[in-house]
Length: 168
Image 1 (cartoon, rainbow, N blue to C red):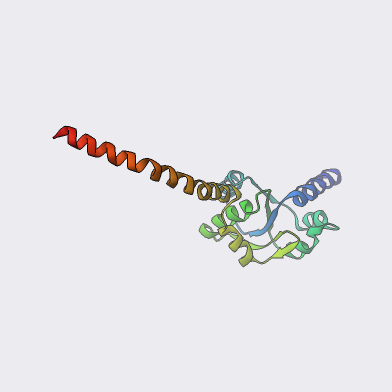
Image 2: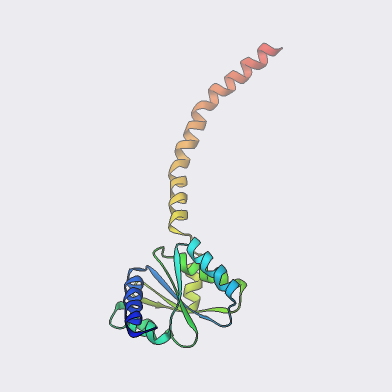
C-alpha cells in the first residue's frame, strides 16, 4: 500500500469513526478466513462495519478528534467495529467473542467516553433501537386493545346465551 492509499484510508476511517455512534476495539488472534467471513457477515446484519487496520494508521485516524482517547487501545493485532446503531457493533462483537475465544473485546468508545470491555459487554445486552420502539408501541397500544375487548365482551356474552337458547 503506497502513501496516497494510506492517506485515503486514514481519512475515510477518520470520517467513518467520527460519524459512528459506537466504536468497539477488539484483538483478533488467529481467526481463520471462514471465521473472519462469519464475523463480517454478522457485523453487516447488525448494520455495523468491521475493519482490520494497522495500529499506526488507526492512531493517526483518531488523532486530533474526540476519539483520540482510544489510541491507547491500539496495541497488538487489533480490529475496529463501528456502527450508527448505538448497540449494533457491540452486540455483534460480543456475540461472536462469546462463541469464539480468538476475538477479545479490549474496549470501546461511545458519546465521548472510553468504554471498558465490561461496559462494551453490558452495552451489548441492551435492546436495539428498533426493539425499544416496538416495545414502546406495544405498551401504548395495550390499553386501547384491552378497552376494545372489554367493550365488545357484553355483546359477545349475550350472543352466546342467545345462541345456546336457540340450540336447545
